[in-house]
Length: 325
Ligand SMILES: Cc1cc2nc3c(=O)[nH]c(=O)nc-3n(C[C@H](O)[C@H](O)[C@H](O)COP(=O)(O)OP(=O)(O)OC[C@H]3O[C@@H](n4cnc5c(N)ncnc54)[C@H](O)[C@@H]3O)c2cc1C
Figure 1 (cartoon, rainbow, N blue to C red):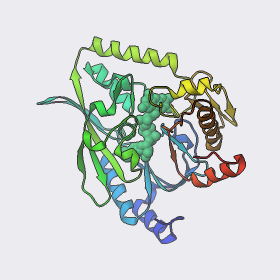
Figure 2 (tube, rainbow, N blue to C red):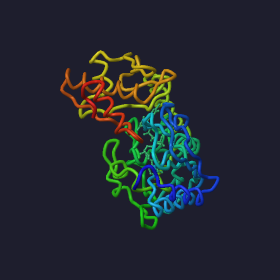
Figure 3 (cartoon, rainbow, N blue to C red):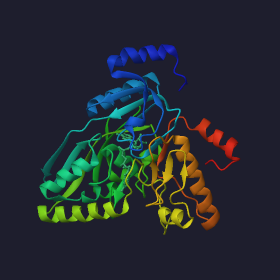
């Protein structure tokens, strides 16, 4: 797909989406870290049908797009995102009792923490681990979000997936090829859209679900730093914790511009107010270099770099004399 988008395609895009097409929209306000430059175009969808229709239209036009949920696991480049960003606000959900058990069906823009809390309030168990995780169901399905021994792989029954040139397919959990914070969707960015999903729930009592939720919420309060962030920056390497390694490398509290490695938790990088993606990127470099030098461990990003990162990485190489991933 060509960039910048040829003017004939831009005209066609404006014709297709009319007032629904917003132009040159800063993405910082749509991310949990409040960081990121503009999307060339932004389309807000409020139902899974709209999401599917918009995706089909953009694929037909050969215009690249990315879906943004809560923006809580992405670091958007300062120069922004070329092409179209689709902001997913499709958030209908329902609880139902199937012949084979309790189910929660939701559109992919439903906030995970919200549907998890609703399940707790019904005395349905299975999602208590998710009550403090920001972002949408679609983002969680992509990232295999999880906490406290629960994750999406453990509760997902089926996800409705749309791919280019295809009909909507019902993917059972196996097809998502889940691993720790990883999935087929994560390994194929921009190639498929999650429209909706059905989660398996189990019966319990309100006392049980509340008690479970309260333990997790209290634990999170103890460990999670305040401030705008993307959650954990790096995946935990096998048998260890990224936060422990960063702390042992003496990096807690290190800052670059407006970004800081949290003094409270080494794997959280906080926007102190005016952080840029370049500030965060330089902290990422420092953490990787120090942890590799001191402990021989290569830290892998959990957060996804979204947008126009190539120029930024080559600038970093020029100014720092190497080390960019
Ligand atoms: C304070 C804080 C705490 C956190 N705690 C945890 C935690 O305990 N456990 C954990 O796993 N994560 C945690 N996270 C990370 C984040 O909340 C999860 O990864 C979350 O599931 C991301 O959802 P999102 O909607 O924000 O995704 P986004 O960041 O918007 O998107 C992430 C990726 O998913 C893709 N995507 C999103 N929706 C769709 C869709 N409908 N179809 C196709 N692709 C899609 C995007 O294109 C992008 O590639 C935390 C983050 C923060 C800020």
